[in-house]
Image (cartoon, rainbow over all chains, first blue to last red; front, side, top):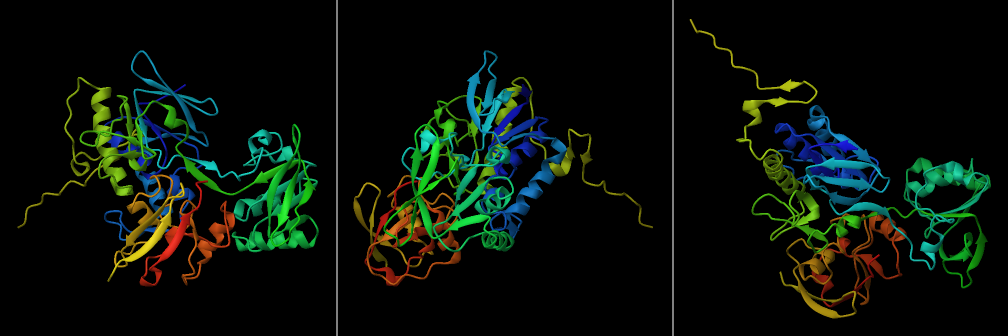
Length: 352
Length: 109
């Protein structure tokens, strides 16, 4: 069981900055994120795109913003559970919460801060009949262990980097690799596109473009896919053992929607007059995941919400303590790692 | 500058004729959100970067629209329910030439 003061769900900019504000109050944080790296949308969707409305940053790349936040919170030694999705929450008799991920990792904290953005990123699934029936019976949306495909006939669909990269990788493992994409053009690193071209010329990748998988074949487990080439009337069947649609990720609110929280417009309702607490005391929602009158989904608003939320969390965790906010310029920043940053003292020297 | 009239058929098949401003730097996805023709969280998820397809729509009038950027083209290549007249609403900036435009929102993925 991982124990912490504030359990943050979502490691995007708002979740990361919460670690800093909590740290100033000597509260420890642990973050859960479904993605394998911190940064949320900034790292996953648009790391190379600029942002212009972060105060005092005339221009900053989303990826650099995440790097800076990671640097800023380093001294507060946050814990991370990455690549796992927060699935269930249970309130304990002592008022704390236990949050369990889809992989069974358990976390306990007196305060839970949901900074889940648009939700957890889930694979985009094509609309095919019997899709759910074949999931884990021949269909997978991500490749966890490539050995599973040793000597198997694999069909990959998609036109991005992951479709290209896995097609290349699996040529050394699988018996047959077929790559199907709706266009002749691929959107990926030039290097990967050229490699696929080369492997196609060698006959190691069976490339079918422009085409689409339109049906799934098999009884209990997948035995093939139906493929339709654009512009041709007849579809044809292609035998295979595995079908891996790689159409990227899209965010879904997911299991959080079933936690008994008040939801409006696919977001969690919070008390914005006070502390961004949800209808369940002890559970807060900050950043893009929350809603209130006048809500704006901006990173800078998430930072503000995180700051106020931490003050409320402090009162909740230490109801008997009195505290007044102190400027970092005055109080400095004392990390849990023993580091201390503070403003240099002015030197007093007489002038002759 | 004057507003233009755009007819947007929502995901329930209901047509709405709305006024879209040409001087607010708005795109079609934002017009749909401004008039709440699709629930928040189901459209414009990526914020308008052509990085999701939640604002996909089918263009049903024969307006001459600006050509697709590579980003839009690539996103539509991976989106679902794509037809020949598919566009991403977030990439269609409201312009005077769009008066009378008719679009239908693509189903939610």
